[in-house]
Length: 309
Image (tube, rainbow, N blue to C red; front, side, top):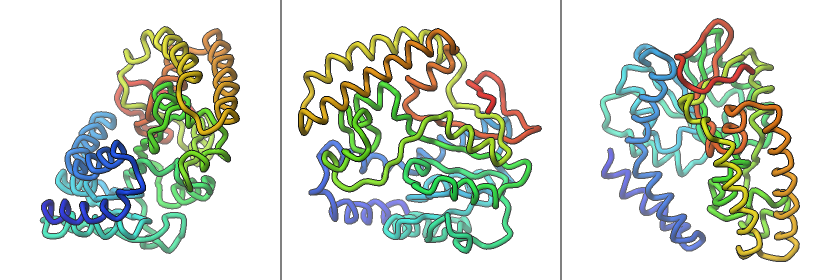
């Protein structure tokens, strides 16, 4: 139940509160306690993108976290199932859904393992939010998605974009300026141990294409890309100045950020000459790639930014 979940979450947060900043604690608390509202908004977006309700669909939430999305799916008549790797998040989700009028099985385990879910089950809709960037063996993840999908399966995803100027100003997980500009091997010097593996959208496109998906539709409306070039240029100018002003752990890390950002700006100038405003928006501005990936023969609703993979 909701009240019991909030009490349990405060105990959970207290267990590591001293190891994170006040900004991080506030963001983590806001994210956790808003899980039900966020789940309902996600389902609303899903229905809009797919042009259909989720009622009657067999849905799987990979990395189901606190369970808010599962509750929202069940409220709308879907058959919802979740899998969560982290044992503490799994326990919190159990508390969150306890006493609710829905049968929502949640499995605790690693989605990459074939025996983590009941065998032979195919899903109509797979949701995989804030998961891709935490998986090192990305090829195994796509193999598992292929295992549980049929020809009509849609996948809803949310993946942070490390090349977005928003992410350069404040990385999605650690909230540190310039973190995405330094080499991954140097991240631990700044953040401590981590398991974040940022990858470009083009690579995800190739991986989805390899398992039969051919269209990515972002939740951004088509007009979002208008003026992207100018906004990106202005943001890049500000970041170039900020690199010299912001504190870095060492001059070596500052030099890494400066060199890598200069390279990114060169690639951006090349892309301006050969790519569309939609591509520029997706590559350099969109903070999170959020939308649906669909297979041949299915087309989601028009009016949103679409990419053929």
